[in-house]
Amino acid sequence: QILVAINMDGAGAALGATSIAVYAASTAFEEHIDRLILKYPGVVKVEPWPESNHSTFSFRGVPALAIGSVGARNIAHTPQDKLEMVSPARLVETAQLAQDILASLRPGSYRAESAD
Image (cartoon, rainbow, N blue to C red; front, side, top):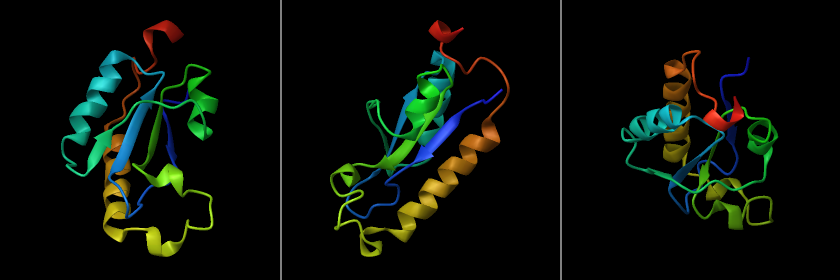
């Protein structure tokens, strides 16, 4: 019954652009996300990586999104991971992107074809 899981880990880092990766989703849903992020020039699509909380869902065929920051994985959960490393503008952008994604969700064919 879950339409999509959204994991935000490392989002808002001042060091790099906001990133998004898509997992276990249909081609139509991935294309939908691609169109949504066009509104956000500071957001870049990155290759999926099989770790963190989104994997709990994607490994079970539930579409998932990981929203983070390019470069933040190098400092996340380390002593350098401090509030000063966060960009308020990027956090706002991340929240707006998540809001747009959630507002656009419609029950339908979001799951990857292979997960059916």
